[in-house]
Length: 346
Image 1 (cartoon, one colour):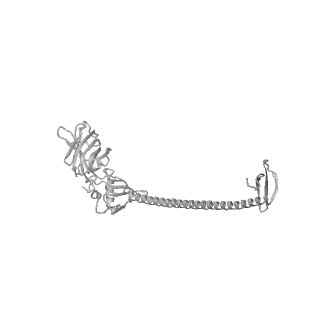
Image 2 (cartoon, one colour):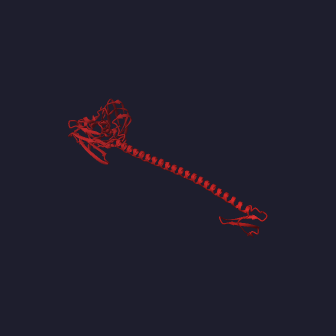
Image 3 (cartoon, helix red, strand yellow):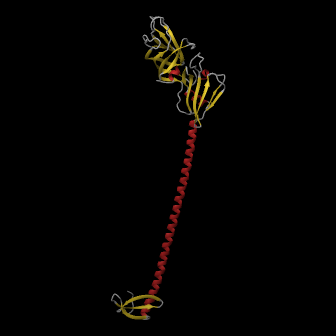
């Protein structure tokens, strides 16, 4: 097998639903078809569809064991039960990956008269699941923008090769090269329908630059190259740029916050210093005013002691009798008791 395809390990459960349009091989009466399945050393058989004739219905699930199997192809033979002389009616042989590409999904597969798949002889409806591991790699994530990739054709079993091509793209840094001298069956390591000449194509859908593209490559083709875009790396790069821009913005905001805090601290300090200076100036001014007041008080006391500048005696408005002096150099009224001949201030 290709290095990208793992050996199968587990149980393949196959449901043979029905067949349609198969040829009649017995001369008299209706034929009784059943299906034999061959995969490597494993074999399985369905029940017989009594009088199923050309359109038998089975609706039966059979199991095939796969123990580290590197076998690619599975074979279905529709036979006619005829008193121990069971004869082949039709058959088909194709990669088991065609069944496992669509787990649990019913699909029609062509039947042929011979193993060389030249003369078609009806079709068979099958579905299958794998309880185990192995097979083609799955498309895990749209790393390279691959949406879907199928290898097969309208009358040929179709295989999902999306995961296979994703691995190829990863190995070759996003470039898928299909050489002219290498058929698709050699590129993938299996043929969807061996020996059949019907058109087999690879249909690849992928996104690039936000646009969906589709490429169709035939079994035989010219040199073809498909360059994919690493969506994950692009998203990571955009995320890194966004994170860097966010970090720069946060750094600018941090610096601006620090500048504002420093400015607020400077203004608070200047205000505190200004308040301190104003307080000191107020204290000095109060002291100066107190000094002047004390000087004037001394002058008033001296004047009253000498009896100078006496104006007149009168009754104060609150009926308190006293005297006052008005000095030409100090226009302030001082009251003194009539019993206080020295003019003490009240």
